[in-house]
Image 1 (tube, helix red, strand yellow):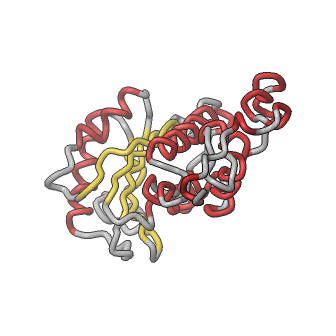
Image 2: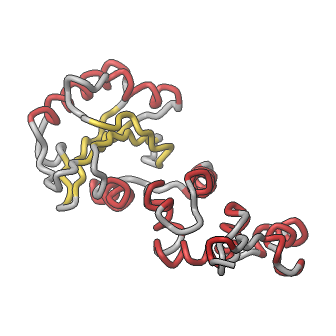
Length: 234
């Protein structure tokens, strides 16, 4: 039998005591390690590796769950034994865990400076090959409520509809927002379009009584706070 003709290793092929799904039902999810939890999402392995081993390989390749969270669907799909459907399930499960944590006010990050924003989102944005614009929603104590992706593609003042930036803020009753986007070029220097967009966002925020605390540009070579540089902020 050729290697490609060998059947994939399934969780069902493991000894009953080693099957993650059965152990989760019997003892709870906390009894499983990260590779075993991933194995439940993967369901099947590949010739020579069961699902738990594939899960461990993903953790090793990307440097843990945080690395998998930062990786794109395409990067995860590049791994042997992981198709688009499995990659999407893994990303969805990790995102659910992140949102569950954010639901607890005491666990939400507090954002008090541009450095706090950069620490939270530089890994998500700095290496992207297309522009992405996010709005960060904050409560009265600057606790993070939610991060919302508004645009993916070309981000400039002529294309961004200011109403779309504030819609999630109104829906979640946020008292302030921070706008963040990336520069795929690697240079975080704000463009004239960035400054123009900042002015429009600030004016709309005043009408809605929602403070715009900052507009930041993140890139491979660092980040820039337009507020710190006095660009668009009066």
